[in-house]
Image (cartoon, rainbow, N blue to C red; front, top):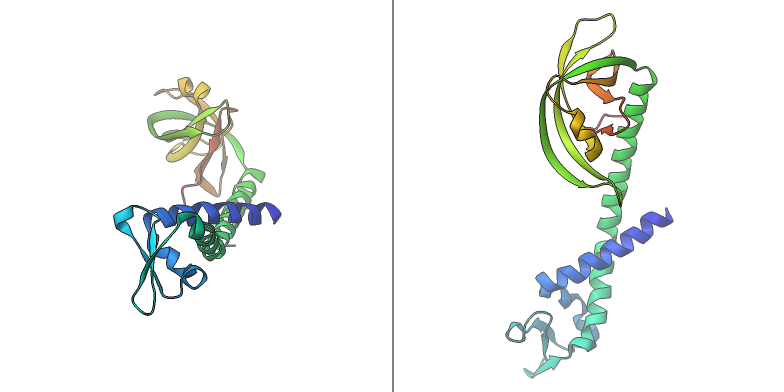
Length: 201
């Protein structure tokens, strides 16, 4: 809970500050605090420069240091609720998917699978010293006591495991007979990536 709130505050601050750079009009929400008239962006001076047009028609330039703290705080506060809501939705989605995976693995059976096709679809750092790659695999699965079948899955594969992903290579996997298209890796260098719609609870 505290971690979610802290992350919401941080992302709200980042989004609020970035929003001011690309949409200076957001600063108008603090107009009553720094201006007795209308607060308007002064684009002739560059980003995050404003002028105050008073009721009697006078114009006054607002110093950046005078209004920037108010603007950042105000826009951040406006964005924190939707950011917090988005984080909660993401956490719920991840929890539902994790529960579905755990249910599958609870009754999963070991199976061998032959690599038919390999396609790298993305890469990113999962940890400080470990680089992992998203790989789409087409597998020919040999379930115990059943006929073999073709399945297409996406795994997150550490770079040390890429050498195993060659056409014709046999891999250790786990499958739930009720949902055979979900082929889970039984290798230490790979993990399953959920690519289906989020299951209903």
